[in-house]
Image 1 (cartoon, rainbow, N blue to C red):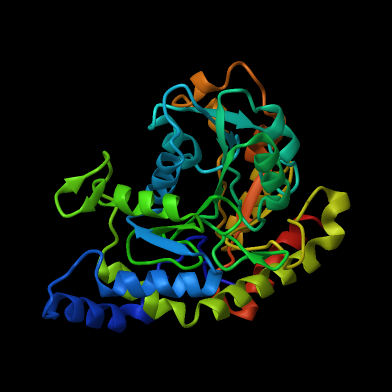
Image 2: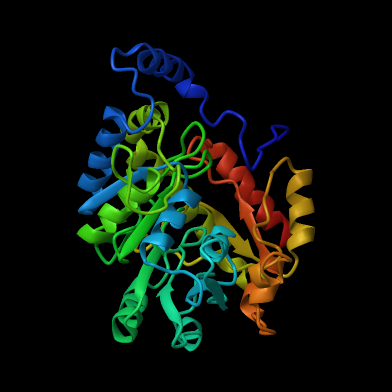
Length: 370
């Protein structure tokens, strides 16, 4: 097979090209000339609220912006601590540090790669204000356990569901487990947009009102600033594009799940040879990224590249080992996070992959282990 299958495809929005041009003209030529926080943003918020059951959905400029608003809304600041995973995308730590609070790292589960509840609870101190578990790759964090910990310890719970929109755990949608939850609409996310975008979800009226103020310079009404906020407002073009993509979102999610199920079935007998696929099933699964674990990661990556299959390595250096966050590591070690950075290899799982391409990817992995 000579076709190259990139991990990040360059035709992600090719089928949306005509629609994109049309909606830009419609937004640009509309009588109201409202380009941020207009009718499309309101419709998107209502749509997501209807799907998730969240009382408040607040659209903002990005997934990182959503986390920033959520952390701020909890009141976290200088002298406070927030427990975060050591293996994750860096905003779980930077959004805490940028508030003057301290991100306290805890280790992850060695297989699911999400924050380990036991490690997180051990990291709690009298200064802890919140816990921020994050869903990673294809697995939701153990939210029932974190909900229990937060309740027992009197802490706020922020659910970083940036990669997990559409996932459901025990009948409850992602984004709705914590006091606050967030989704990201960055281009390569399962519901990606043309640019950046995010939302904050909450059932708490006070937190919802605070997030709405914070996203718009802390304004309670025009030119009345009740607190110092941010410029994290969603564009109308971004919202219109997301509404357009929403119609087929469930179908794309199912295609991702089907590809993941095929991979997992094909790789089941490779465990004895050192290849560990992610946990199977649909409960608490999002299949944003499909990553296997193997001690021969680099050799497997080279083998797949020779067969035209692009792959990706996530977070090879855990957050506590990053120069920007090393001062928060407190001399602790996080062996599972280190191992995950050394062993993970993500395979293509784009919904527009053909069956033949998916079979080629799986066969190429199996060839390496023969």
